[in-house]
Length: 348
Ligand SMILES: [Zn+2]
Ligand SMILES: [Zn+2]
Image (cartoon, rainbow, N blue to C red; front, side, top):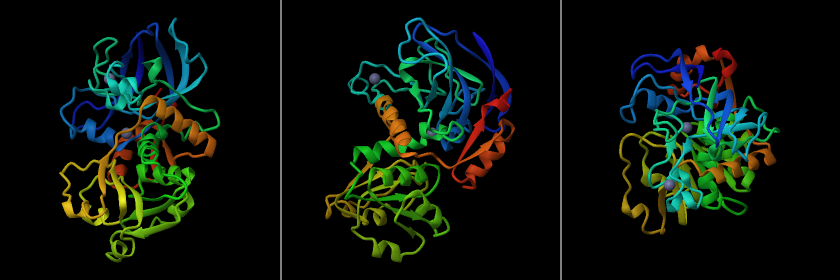
């Protein structure tokens, strides 16, 4: 066992505090990773505050992890000491169900094992996430992070990046398709960059036009304000694919009206309240309303390689570990452009 420094939530209502946690010994198929950087995802905040269900405390979160391999088990073949690697939202799955067998471990019939708050099949402990100095993960759930991607910025690809890449890929965004990204935050800004690199024509739908310059810089060709009712008239029946990254209740009928015939609106944002969909927003245009969760390991690797090939990186603000609680407050105020990354060297 190795004891490492981490930042943990002591309860649902207290700030995160510096502590130590134990990482298991490296098993035959395990990889030990010294963490260099960890992104802050909105899910981390929901989780530690108990907003997505009760959890055990203390809990370390963080599922956008990048670092270097420092030790490998005797049977490891995919990674070696010194490799730059990443870990996203999952650290294991059943590997036997139809979804795991086709490489979509995120939809494992038994439920995938989350990087935090999961029950680790290796030792039965609760998994502890990336706000820590090191982590031990079975090799099949460790990604190769191309050296050409700036290590200080790359971590958010492991959750925000794949969460947008997977639906863009699944619904075939590319040359000749018109894509709208709803919300320009941590998720949305990755959607714009990836959809543009895939060759799609991208429009950003944001509450105001205040981020229009950013939208254009990230590769969008248009940016419209959703606070302006005109937007929904002007852009009616315009898009093949709309990805909604907003985790608040919005007028789904209005957004579905922006789809062409056979268009699909995909929710990746998860509001706590149910959303209402009028049937007549779907029926006349044979439209679909869908959801999508992260991506499988194979697809996550494909996304990292695609981002390396196209020079795509998240926009990040680097913070030290003692700024995590302040960063949480800023995430809740949407006061970040566009993702916080913790410098794990400051955990020491
Ligand atoms: Zn996340
Ligand atoms: Zn499975």
